[in-house]
Structure formats: C-alpha cells, structure tokens
Length: 60
Image (cartoon, rainbow, N blue to C red):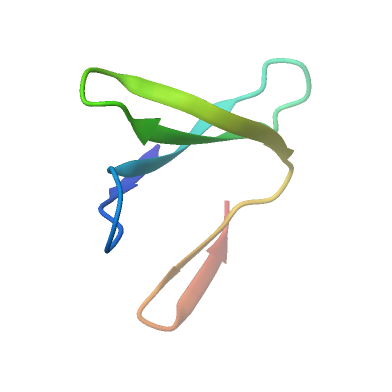
C-alpha cells in the first residue's frame, strides 16, 4: 500500500507499507521522488495499522 502526495514546496513524497516476513507486521518507508526514481529516506517497523475514513477507524 502506498500514499503519494505533493507538498506545497519540494518534490513528491510517498509513504509505503510492505509486509514484514518475520512476524506479520509491516515496514513503513518514507520516500522522496528524485525526478527519476523514488529514494528511500527512512523506514520503521509497524505493528498496528489504523486506517480512518470520514470519521470511521478500523485497525488492520
């Protein structure tokens, strides 16, 4: 799953979630568009993901 956005200033950015094979969690990657490809700026493990839509929330 990924979310791509354009900040007011600067290049496009993306938040990307990938499954962690070891324990069923996920990795959250922060990436920036270089003009040619996505460059990873960092990552961290995620154990619980909550998605909210129009005031409703659900844990994934």
